[in-house]
Image (cartoon, rainbow, N blue to C red):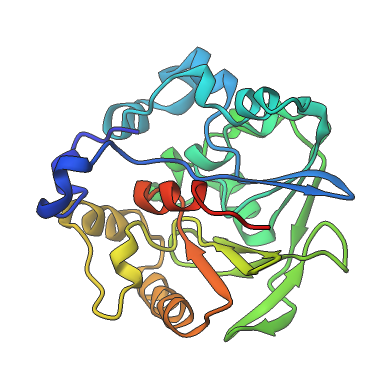
Length: 266
C-alpha cells in the first residue's frame, strides 16, 4: 500500500528505505488444516477496485492491486489449494484485513462478536467506510466470540479459537475498532502475537516510544475509542518489552514484516 502521505509515514532518517506499508498475514499449518490470520485484500478487491473498496480507501491508501500479492495466490504458490484453508482468524474486519474471506470457501471465520456487530451496523461515521460488507456478507460460517475468557500476559478475556486445545488465542485489544483483537500463536520458540492495527510503527513498542507524524494522525483519526486504544497500546508495549517469549508485530510495518520473513520459527 502506498498512502498519499508516504513521506510522513516513516522517520526522516529511514525514508531512503521506505517502500510503503504491508498487510501482514500469518499462515499456520495445523491438524485442523491451514489457518489464516487476517486475509489482506482479496481477488475480488483487486478485480473490482474502487467500486468494492470504496473511494476513500482507494484514494487515500492506494493499495497495490496485484493478484500475486493476495493471500490466495501466495498460498497456491506454496502448493496448497484455497480449500485447504479451513479457518480464518481475524484481528478485525477493516477493508484491508477481511477482503480475502471469499477466496477461501471452506474456511470457518473467527472474530470477536463486538467486531462483527459493529461491522454489520456501521453506526459511527468512522465505520461506514472502513467496513465493506460485500467482502464478507456472503459467508455464514462464523464463530463470534464474546469478550470472556482467561488472563494471558496481563490481558483479560483471552480465549482459544478453532478448538479449546488450540495454540491460537484471541486477545481483545480494542480501541482501533470496537472489537479489535490481537492473535497469539504458539510457536516452537515462544509466542507470536499479531497485534493487527493496535499500533502501526515498530518504534511505538520501544522503551521511548515514538511514531511518524502521518501514522500518528491516522491512528488517532481511525480509532473509535482513542483513550482505549492508547491504554491498550501501552499494555502491549509493556508486554513487548518485558516478555522474552512473546514476539509482537503489527499488520502494516514493512520492517517488522521483513524481519518476520527472515526468521526460522522451527
